[in-house]
Image 1 (cartoon, rainbow, N blue to C red):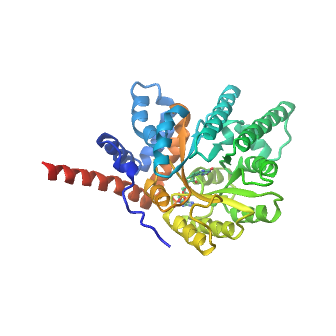
Image 2 (cartoon, rainbow, N blue to C red; image 1 turned 30 degrees about the horizontal axis):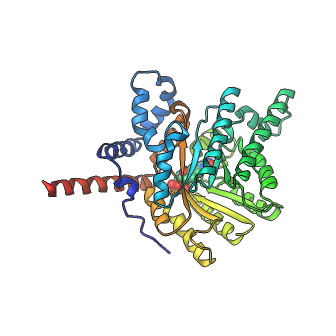
Image 3 (spheres, rainbow, N blue to C red; image 1 turned 180 degrees about the vertical axis):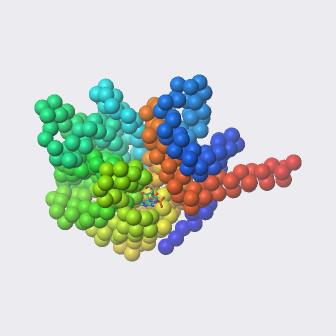
Length: 390
Ligand SMILES: Cc1cc2nc3c(=O)[nH]c(=O)nc-3n(C[C@H](O)[C@H](O)[C@H](O)COP(=O)(O)OP(=O)(O)OC[C@H]3O[C@@H](n4cnc5c(N)ncnc54)[C@H](O)[C@@H]3O)c2cc1C
């Protein structure tokens, strides 16, 4: 089962010349790993330098984020709708140190759910738990350490906030993704997500938890959920975005890395996850959140083998804004249920997200090549057509 992912997607064709040049610049620049490492270390401290914010906004921020506010993303969402692509507004502020910040993030996510309710092509909302709950608390819960009185209060408050977000999604007839993060806080995130699924997924798949298939225990966790959950299991399947941090921490702290030893093992594990999910469809609904063409082709084949319609409501695909539009648009063009995650938020607070995207693109030379090749092909096509006109 295959469709041709080599077409230049309309999103690239619609870029102005300067946008195209900027995208080429970004994808060439992120190939230099030292530059990413430098950016990661230095950026938070040099944002005040005149011109830095302007430069970031004009380059990586514009490429990978939909804007600073939900309003900024509207045009993008409409454009995606015109191509039969769904959208998922993702408030990507991750620097939630203070209570005020958490409150602001919670309000923004709630606003994104209300916004989704008014849009036909926004079926999901999403929540990153570190935006609404302090990391040290998530870590303590994950380690099953006893909580102080004030921590217990904070936990109760967090539970209430997450519940309100899931309830709002359910009431609006929308679904909600709960993102996963680092393995040392994921037990707390998984536990909260399971509680929400138990409450809201009695009849329908409403709350989706995320499984990172780069972790050694992921398949066992998937099977455990399928075997034991007395509710509908809804899943976002990802490879995982933090493998370097995970390995570094494991080495530094002297414990075995929870990440599979190499990319091939991760790919096998992810693809096995797809097979397990499709075999259990009905109890399970899932979204393959991936830029990997091999996994996408496998899932298309599995859907065919198991008689699942391309536009099924319970199997879908998703990619991130600014990445692999050739996959997204081709899937949409062939009638598949596919969406784009559109991150937005204040530039400063989306930095961790932007750095992850740069790292991801730096780490994957083959995909990087694909993305860059498409952009360069479009540039070449424009040069050729200009020279013909002259
Ligand atoms: C819609 C959407 C939602 C997402 N939500 C989340 C989320 O909630 N949590 C999260 O963590 N990520 C999330 N991601 C990010 C996702 O994990 C990365 O985009 C993904 O890892 C990139 O992998 P890929 O499936 O696109 O395939 P590929 O690009 O083929 O694989 C790259 C991935 O393989 C793994 N990998 C590469 N080299 C190695 C190695 N040497 N050893 C071990 N593993 C390796 C890493 O996971 C790396 O990111 C999301 C992505 C999308 C598209």
